Length: 180
Image 1: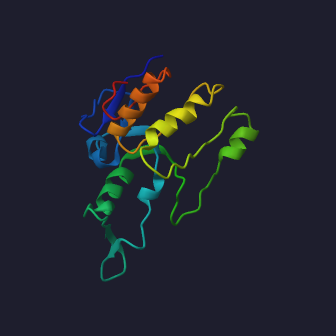
Image 2: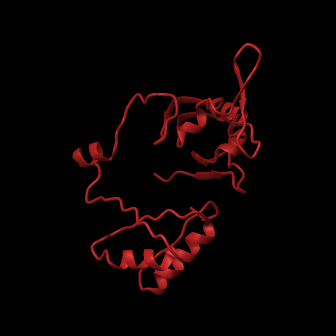
Image 3: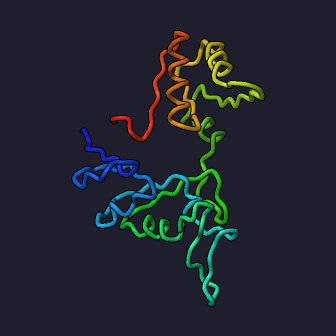
């Protein structure tokens, strides 16, 4: 069974005939006329009111949130939460106000054999260009089958993949414009 997937946002318009949508929150308005069986929202803390940035009316009700860039978060939150969905799953590692209904952390996943042979490494490099040091760390992990590295920008991801390839380590970068 092959599903049609539509990316939405970061330069992509919604393909309304798709069965699966991957959407950034700023483009949720493109999906407002659809109904979904399941909606999964990553970075769920963006959908909680923030006491430090919330704007209130004279009755004390939240009427908006403004980030440093002036973006009205309440409007974005309303667009995302206004999408019709039979079931919703919110995922976040940094909840601000709410307590989760269900937690399935790394330790539980390992104990349940959902994740195996898994470890997290956070390298600390204090001086100079970090990329060569990271390539060396990857070279020193001969038993690693797959490595996922998050970079700060597309440019950094492209540069890191190129350095790995030059070192004989097959690598690729993926971003919002990568074909699925």
